[in-house]
Length: 249
Image 1 (cartoon, rainbow, N blue to C red):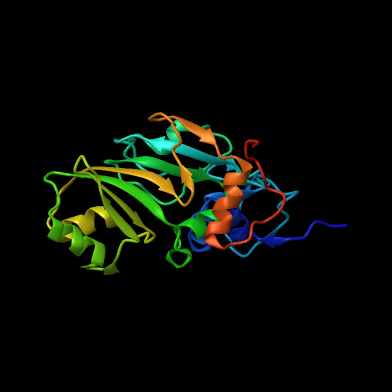
Image 2 (cartoon, one colour; image 1 turned 180 degrees about the horizontal axis):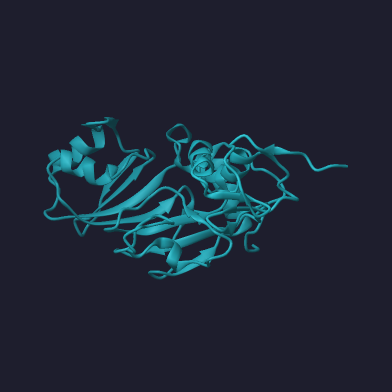
């Protein structure tokens, strides 16, 4: 029986290369080849199990999905490509298969970052409608007052909309632990700025039920199968069968 054919940009998106829209632009830019030939038709039908599909010279056809938990250090940017040759989070994990960060932690933020080539899970964990909770530890230049903490807990208005944390906890050392599910750019720093607090240190402790669990700075590990399943359950998105590449429980 012949293998089923799929649209090229959809295959790229499922492989975690980029979204379908961005994948289309990459194809039109001449960055994609099929069986060694550069193509420029986003809707081209391909056979993922048979055709060799490459992006910028790196083969991405039918990858086994891999999932990494990384303790991102300060100074690294959350991207797979950078024309300015700055340190990237992808420099800290295996080069093959190619993976991409799930969402972003800015250069001055440390903590838990997921990297994978599973485009389906990436979309589920970064799209606002799935409301995946993330917990951050925040150190401010000066301690928060009771009034500032109350304002933050009640939510603040940002330039791109209202932002309210799931919960806020003031620690004995003056740091703040905050849980949010919104995925807007630099949202924690902007929320604190809105109440007049300057963030000195920002560290992501967990995503859903997944934590760093003793992982040292710059270190990474494979996610266990149960952890990947838990992330899918948390997002409410079903997992495609046949692509598991996790470590064992």
